[in-house]
Image 1 (cartoon, rainbow, N blue to C red):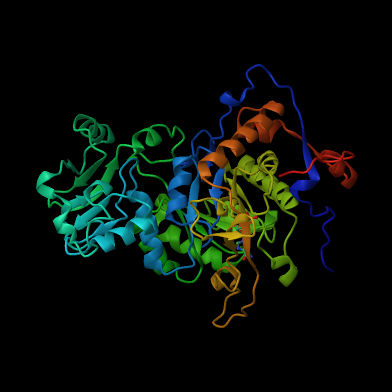
Image 2: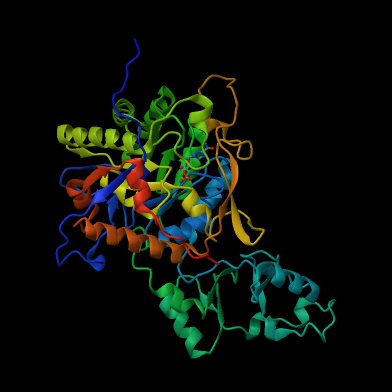
Length: 497
Ligand code: RVP
């Protein structure tokens, strides 16, 4: 006979937090959102700790290098999507690792033989007015000059005029050398009243620009997630098919942590993948596994060597796995169950395995609930897809701006490995949809609001750390009628413009 679980599958919207005593120390500025990303032994620290408990989903429409850089600068971490060729994924990882605050790789470059018409086209395309003139027109070619808006007059000059005839030539440029600090670069900018300082290597090859206007922007990112070498941290998704080629390429590119990406991770394929990685690299390569929704799945992947476990099947906003395959579990119930297994494992073995709640988080308070229920960090797709930094197109629909957001199991992503059940020929059907999400602007502005709200909720619960929240919070189920009570009710809302 089948086993019946007695607990109802529930999700975050069915719970509320009951406030605890808010002491005078319990103020948002005292709240730390630091949290472990990978396993550690009693009395030790995790090899990687996040400064905010948020990671971005392993998805084409979410985690590209631009979003990864911005999220790491704000204390979280991205897992660059794995549903792409190995080399392009490794290149994205390299791009994040190469990022140096204030040092920008030039995105506008031309050769001296190109024309004013090319300059105008490029400026319109990038929106940037500083153009690096290099021998081969690439961002790292030999620097031959610089063009800024002060070097030409579109109305008066011929559009055929060659770049070499109006650029500021290299002989007249003030440049910085590769290896100098941002402080040193800014001193040169200040001393010479420059707007842009090109940074070159020994062979005069352009490496970066440092812009005067960026100085203030780059000064304060106190939560930045970087290693001892000051490079930003970045993760990457892998699958259970091509890991013998993909993992070495990602490691070579400098990836800090991997995660096996699967909608249903309780499988021998994951065990094999973990065994291979740990056999090759030991604990030098950190790798998470999942997704699971119960204790059995958690214990299986932990025994197989996973450094963290991802929880959640079918709760993602773009996910139709539950409808298509009838598998899954309410996200809150799954999390509560797995958190118990995590705690039991810690008690028995003295090893703490962080768990990540993946998918289905809608409101900011859901994030606090998930942490209170035992999640160590949270993976989100929809939340991040809305921002400028996500890799998808921003479109206007009617009076609203939206961004595209599609599931890895959709026909558009064609990430069949994620849904692979093994064998040489596997059934391919959609488990995700292609959609839009409301455009929300810059990540940093949104994060500030979200983190502010999370901290306020934690203070109401009397907790200044995630550990305290997990230990002491009181959580209650709500009835459907009390959910109605929680919104505006029995009033006539004024029209919102
Ligand atoms: P959400 O944050 O609710 O948008 O959910 C994102 C999560 O949904 C991902 O981290 C992943 O686990 C899951 N996902 C991604 N693609 C699909 C799909 O196509 N079904 N599901």
